[in-house]
Amino acid sequence: MRFLNREHENKLMKLIQRDSTHPKDKERISLFYILSGNDDLYAKSRSIYDFSQHQIIPECLNGGNVDFCSSSRALIRLGYNLYNSYQDSDTSPIHILSGLDEDNYFLATESLGVRFGYSHQVQSTLDDDEVEL
Image 1 (cartoon, helix red, strand yellow):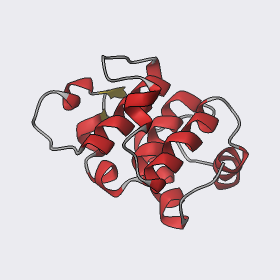
Image 2: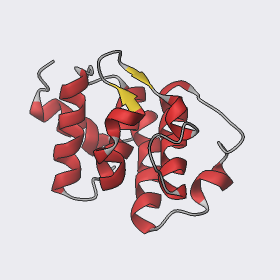
Image 3: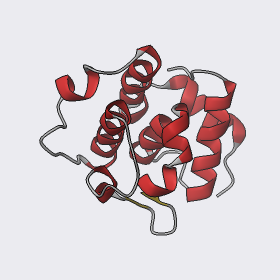
Image 4: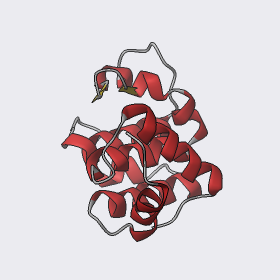
């Protein structure tokens, strides 16, 4: 699996360090992979994931406190589903993938590899950087 660019890789490492995520926690890292690759989601990551409680904030999808476009909502749903099997009426491959642009589609498909252990580049980055928890 690949990163969109070096900034994506750096942002992923920042989220992992902020959360003190174990480098083998594929569920959480797949969520952070998505958040770190999308500027809007990265900027709003504290509304999507509670770093002090180490848990997702599903209310962000319906609460209206934070404005997300449809593609951001789709990526959040995918990240939540990869994290803990979260589902709602819009959590299906068609709903998630149909409205994504090329970069967001890349994030969605690559995040599957992160979650299911086929992301050798992401895992190598985590191993190489020796993430300090």
